[in-house]
Image (cartoon, rainbow, N blue to C red; front, top):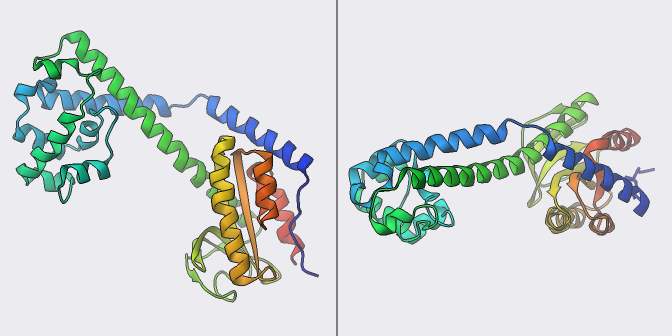
Length: 305
């Protein structure tokens, strides 16, 4: 008889969701060196940029100084002079240049000037009031601008780090758990039929299963493939995107493409999730497991022997 993952009740989902949210809050409130590190790095970049561009005195910013700034990797700091900061892609499109890579801009004065002209037009007047006046900043204005800009860049970097690390850490946790069960990781591969992919006691990461990518694919003991998505959510609103609009959509695709008897779509979730969203994803064929209780995943895998 083919073993199926448990369908959790509303009470069970509510209890696990509360535990997961509590762990998420504790993690966010824990003391970390990341903020201090990012702030110091950002501060260093802006101090160097101010030094190379004469405290952003408009009359002192020459093409040679701009080229030197880009050569020193200060393009990101330049983008963060804008209010709000402008992305690499937007800057390239608006400036209408082929590339904003530092090596390219250093050798192309015309493109360099076009890029900076865009930044000049959207520069933040609240952080840099002296630029519109065409004067050098006072010591107080300079310090305020350095502080605000450094905080702005550091906040963006730590937000990106949290998004990336949350998913990467969860994938690592799942893979290490599978190794603990005796499974071996094999190279990423394209899986277009159920017989392809990892074999007995194997799993692979970031595999293309049909036309959709799965974070982890495991060959169960009964030869089925288990496609696991690792989802971390920082809010109940975000959980809709992570779970219902992504993982559950993939589950429906894999079931249609390979059949319920051949594939087990699953998600290992962590963070903040609304119980209703969990129930909806489960009803669409997605089996749910929690990052804080991977033994339930292990119990299901063992049951497929």
